[in-house]
Amino acid sequence: MITLHHLEQSRSLRILWALEELGVEYQVKHYKRLPTFAAPPELKEVHPLGKAPILTDGDLTIAESAVILDYLQATYDKDNKFKSQNPKDAMQYNYWMHYAEGSLMPYLVMTLVMNNVSKHVPFLIRPIANKITDGVKGGFINPRLKDHTAYLEEYLSTHEYFAGDFSFADIQMSFPVVAMQERIKGKKPKLEAYAAKIQQRPAFQRAKAKSDF
Ligand SMILES: N[C@@H](CCC(=O)N[C@@H](CS)C(=O)NCC(=O)O)C(=O)O
Image (cartoon, rainbow, N blue to C red; front, side, top):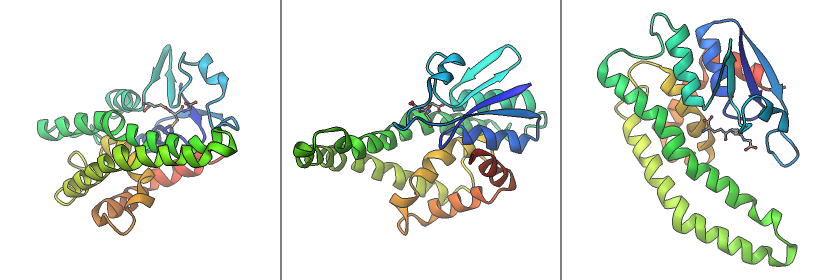
C-alpha cells in the first residue's frame, strides 16, 4: 500500500495531487507543524531528515518531491499520461523537475528566512536586523528572483505546459509558481494564468481538499 507522509502547508501537496491524477489507492498520514513551523520529530522516524514529502510503498521509503513524482510516474502511470515520451519533452521534464528545487526554491526559502529574522532577535536590534535582511533581499535575492520570473514568463509565452502536455513536471513546478503569486501579481500575466489553469484541475482540487486538515 502507498502511504504519503503529509505535512500540513508543505510540498507534499504535490504528491497528493499526483496520486489523485493517477487514481491509485493510497493512504495519507497527516503531520502538524510545530509552533516554530518546523516538521514534528515523528517524521524523522520515517526518514532521517524528517522533511516532507516522504512516500512509502512496500519496503521502499522515498524522499524528495522530484524522486517521488518520478517513481510514481514510472511505476503507476502505465500509459505515460504524465510524462511525454517525446525525447525533447522528456528532457524538458527532467530539466524542470531539477530546476524547481535546485534553482528556484532556494531563493524563495531564503526570502522566507530573511522575512523571519527580526522575530528572532532582541527587540532593540530589530531595526539593524531589518536593515541587514533588506540589504540581502535587495542586493542578492530579489534581482535573481526577477531573472527567474522573467525567464518563466518568457517560457510560458510559447509553451502551454512545462514539458509538452500537462505532466508531473507541472506538479513539481506548481509549488514555487504558486508561492510566487503575490510577487508577480499584475506583472507576469502568463505565469499567473498558468498558475490559475493548473489549479483548476479536478485532481488538484481533490488534493487541496484532502491536504487541509
Ligand atoms: N527538496 C525537498 C524539500 C523538502 C522540504 O524542505 N520540505 C519542507 C516542507 S515544504 C519541510 O519538511 N520542512 C520542515 C522543516 O524543515 O522542519 C523536496 O522537494 O522534497
